Image (cartoon, rainbow, N blue to C red; front, side):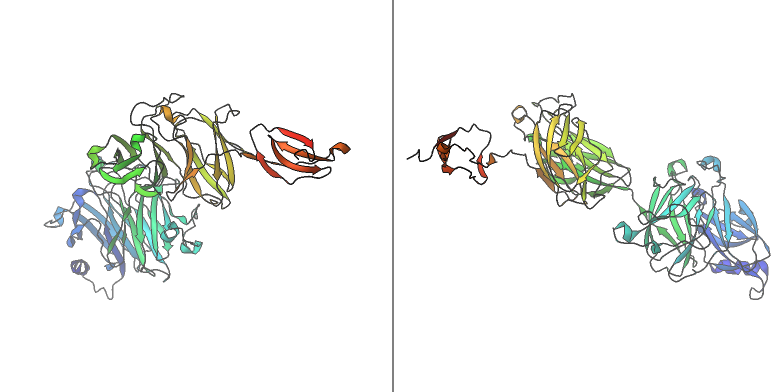
Length: 570
């Protein structure tokens, strides 16, 4: 870097203490592999030797009001005669600049810019740059879009503490007075800090508090599709300033296998900090609902590694974070397996970044099982659904989806007594959309679809205490175990987000009834009577105008009630 200062002194022949000067930082962000290192000449003199991609100079004094020819040459060049690109610039006195080398040497060999911007090697420059922040409580930064094959983008900041469900106020992120706050600035701690930034553009200053953030890059005006996420740890940078630059290629394979897309920050002293990429992930809960007795316990492998050992029927994992955007080969093996080579079923899945899933292992492995009445395949598989919730929306209610997972059961309706129909015409393998009910107790009648007069089974669902929670409710087992290898009987279960599985017990109608008897026969001969039930004396000398309390009596059986004169048993 000393060479840079000396060169500037030589080419001006001026005493910088008395000459007019500007301040300049140079950043190498040209991702063309052929330009990974370059030599930089100023007015024919070598200023930067073997200047590497994603490196920066500190801010230095440069002559102002003087035409400067900037020449770019291959590394280890011999002289300015080797330059392949030349740019002429004049700096204004007392201004601060950045000069960002960007683009590719031969655009025909690289993917075009989606917004039809020129990607030819050039220098992006901007004045009004800061070497320090305007407040000790914030970090000031400008942003350069320097990824040639990337479209117009937005950048969103999420406070890390908020992503961990801690309270964050709007004060955790403020917008510079120099910019109008973009639309959609606050959504559960996620705020848009860069709006519609196109390749070659340098966005005006923004401010963030010096803490940790996740920066999400999305297409312009579409905050739902996250192209890439990065961890930005701004701790300790309060009162500082930076130049944040998007760098590399979204698709390296279409761009001479150049560097992959990334986000970097050049500090005023020339240090370049990489914001580490947040690998795409999804959230997943796995439920074992395969009723085949041979699969009562299984081992589950993911991409060859053992994930779940002796995973039992009607159990579930808690929600876990798993890779997204890549193929996950889920292998199921007997519980006695010793390696992935013992798998009997392999199912490849690709999960989308940021989504939450449930995957239910279901069906049968062997033969000798009843076919599904609706013709659905009962072969062992995974039933998966995204958009799953790990919590409810309201503290007084419970949110849940329902899976029909009973292989020999027809399409069914589920009716909550005194409430109404919750599930309509769900066949084996079907998930419902989310349902929401008050956190109370319910009797759930399972009926054939479109025949609500025939109750197949009734279950007690006690949801008290689950207010604000969520669940995946699944029908499980066989309607006719004797015709299905004596597998588990039909039942209804709920998997909670923490992996707890709750069984809804089958409802058993009461075996007794409550009865009160009143003597109101005014015949003097019947002033007192004895009452017999099925031959046994129930009431002795039961007097006119008297009554019993309510008592338990058998229900569902024939009761023969006999009336005899009082004292008749003597």
